[in-house]
Length: 255
Image 1 (tube, helix red, strand yellow):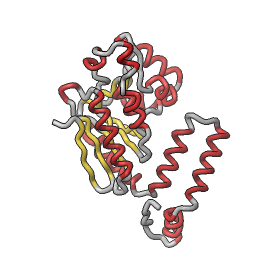
Image 2 (tube, rainbow, N blue to C red):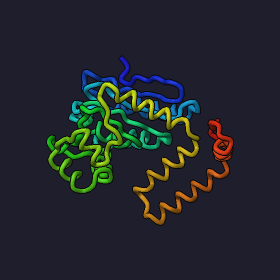
Image 3 (tube, rainbow, N blue to C red):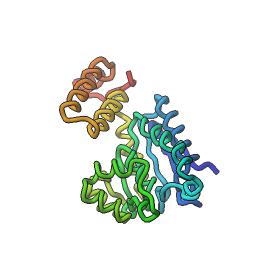
């Protein structure tokens, strides 16, 4: 049985985590499959956006503790996981997470690595690593504090306690909350709307948004203007303007 199910509907690719016997724990094999699927999607001009999801009860319950327990410090230093996470992060098209049930530890980190998180009303987000004598190691401390702010990030990470979908939305971690039976459908519909737009403009906008966390305001504004200017050389920019003036749908080609 494949640990990652892949399906495509028009311009939206859906990746479904499929390790129910392990509560969708993210072992190295599954992370490798996710990275490979995203790298293939990045090269596929027919794919405009990707949705990653789990099942009705669990998005992903964390890293695979059995796999982790077998590694001492030298093995941890040589663990391929940081490279796997980096490959996932390099995906330059819109990436949405449709989260039902528990997104804990590495599962929460995978959701935070996505560009937009949509949650079912039964979703729970948490980083419980501290209860195991460890701490988040795949971006949890850095991304959570940037998403929800100092007070809630410290509380979640130092207590290991999870928050509800509604709390996550209020804190800015989640964009929308839906009935859990409809979460994936809403995410796929949103991805389809996004995928209609010009691919190069989407990639440029995603680059600018992500770098906003890394750059000063002055540097970010400079980067934004540079990307805006580069888009002026694209065919899609002219097509978008012409379509608006001519009151017709744009036919973007990614050029």
